[in-house]
Image (tube, rainbow, N blue to C red; front, side, top):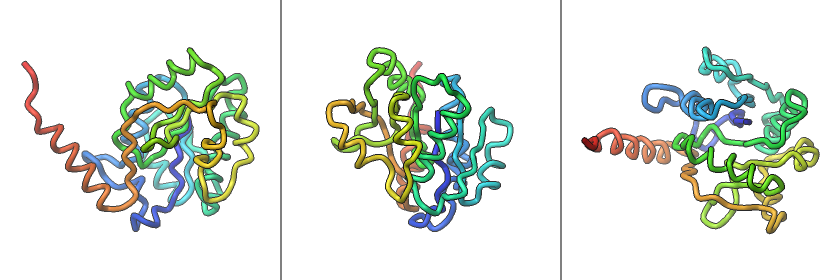
Length: 199
């Protein structure tokens, strides 16, 4: 699995990977979710790379420093896919997630992995209001093209060009791009914590 955590958080105003959610940095929260799937996790870092890596201390992950992080999300995607190809040459797929999706659920991600077993040639993506987007499970035959990916744009335009090869799965993919987004997430989590438990 690949977690993209290299951005500088320009719209947020600071390194959003490190903002606390339930008393832990957001990137650590997302990584702990990924680790529940018991698969190797590669974290692509960039801006504040040392601080992001420090926030993950004690977790079984490998940090990949993307020195071209200023080129944008596409550069980080390319770095992550290259790292998968180099470190896990027999991998059948790569599940790519974003560090600013703090509400990701391990069971939902497991659905993508199970669907890959059933349809190994399909690209399995989250459904963003009818459009495919992260998290995305890319089969290995996509690696050579994605390894050369660069620039500011992620893979959304490329995903749209793949037509019926892409399968969308409903997921909670709330992005934390601004402080207002973070407030929404915090309120949602507070409501969950306050809900009475069933007896």
